Length: 296
Image (cartoon, rainbow, N blue to C red; front, side, top):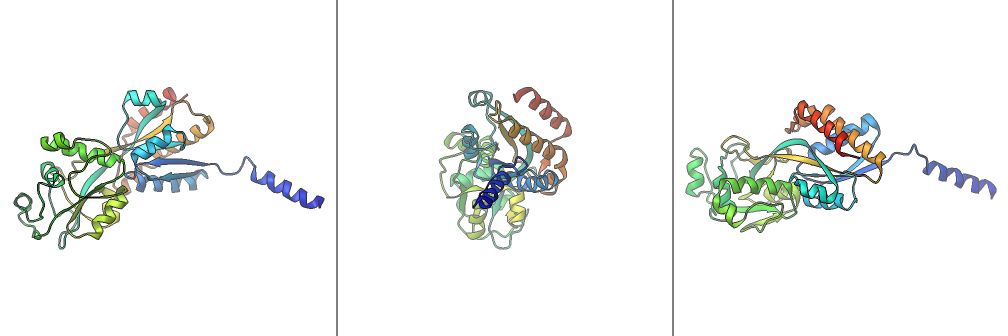
């Protein structure tokens, strides 16, 4: 019996060993998920530090960092200074990516269909309802457009991708700006919803005649036909990390900063291979100075 208690005691010590791996947790943006998952995998190989990340949408991630549920959050809709001060958070950029319209139309491949901001706004307002509409045909004279109804797909969750998409439409269309506006969640005039970039991608892939908006790397990975705009990829978005300014556990905070420093410095090529734009090194140095000044 005594030997049994000794075994249990030793097992308890092993489980409580300080050498055991400590997992860090983050949540938020689905826009950044492809590169975030790649960074996390490579960083774990290099450092042994385990990091979990849940792509639940920017708004949900912000709520979780506000509630200290996670160690960090990522949002594609930046918080303003008043929000950061109120919630005791710091914010810094991680990576830049593109948002593209994606469609499911027979015979139309990636980059073959062109849009303007005004045209996209009219489609999402329900003003243009068919793919062979004259406004689409004028912009795509060499594309055989089907006589098919357009099904608009939008994000149902609070989303930084939606924020940047709606901001682009607001700047392109006075009517959109007045009737719908900009935000992470919107009252959509027409269409059906999908959760996250993955949900929108799945919905577009399932329904002929559908149009949605996703982060560019999702379009590539899911082999979706994406449309081009006036300047190829006019809708650019920056993903921002959020940390607590006064962390309850300074050691976990230091681990998070070490990860982000590795991602910004050593993970640049990984970002490029997934068609994101890494931050310029001059900006990375500013971010590192910001950490030293702002995180207590």
